[in-house]
Image 1 (cartoon, rainbow over the protein chains, first blue to last red):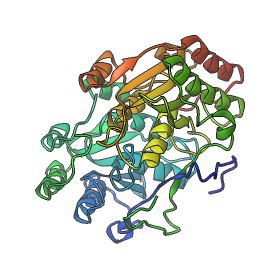
Image 2 (image 1 turned 180 degrees about the vertical axis):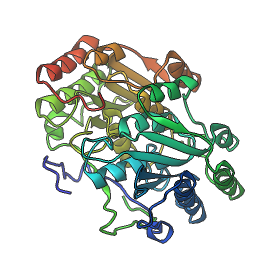
Image 3 (image 1 turned 90 degrees about the horizontal axis):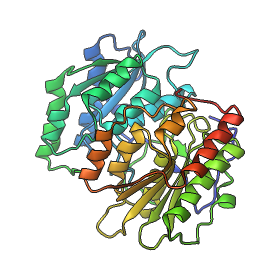
Image 4 (image 1 turned 45 degrees about the vertical axis):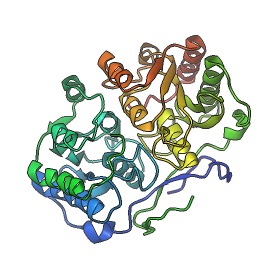
Length: 199
Length: 199
């Protein structure tokens, strides 16, 4: 991508670089369309599981698909500790990578197909807010806030009204798809005594 | 910074690069400690104003200070359109840049002084959630949600309970510091017919 604006390259302000870990192409099949909700959730869960197994971050993964074709646009995995960046939850990385790929700050742009976010665990307050700005038309999660709380992961100020707010603006919500499988990744993380940042 | 993890350098997955616009060192005096809340807010507002005047983004700026010394650690400015990235509100860029600079995913780390976020406008749901994860001990804003709404900027699912949630976890809140000056930047943006993304 060519950026038309001047960028500051001063060594005093190095760019923050948001990157996938090096295993991503071993785990993700970018070419296979995923037709069903379960197929799509499996990608998010596979990314979450790999992130734990390869010790590159917390037990959370996400994937963004074109709703109709089932084409995979981007994935994201928790990178808070790996990249020293509290904003890099799985959903956030997926939004950033997807928007860079399509060249738009919204996935709801006029020449774009509808997009959907699949995330292995119910989003925190930051990620739920970003979901609204991202332009995805549907949010589907696997494990629930309660499942994450059992690991002492805090989801922040999310209330039933928060979901109503998104639904009122046309974002559909899908809940607890492959919940047991998604919760299994949380339990794997706990069994490895993984770090609970933001505990 | 040296990253100890493997990074994916495949041309299929270029890194997302988060950068300041090239005017930042003309506008920001990095060496002068800011002692008062008003002094600190002036930095956030100056960044917001420059972002509008130089047409590099929306009318929102932020700055992170060490609470006691008043040393400036990072600034942030809205870069949603400039960098095609819906997550890059001013507060988010400030968190990312500050955490990269101190080398920690939390500004509340054991060997770090207390940090405070100053933002020219009341944070949206995403940024309020991120404030909790960032480790800042205090959030101070200038213009209010209502001021932003007059420009048709949506702040997302933020409720009084959202602030209580942060306060219960030890984050102090300062409201409407230099509100008129901060609102002036919003009005400048409107007078230039600036783009209302996420409207």
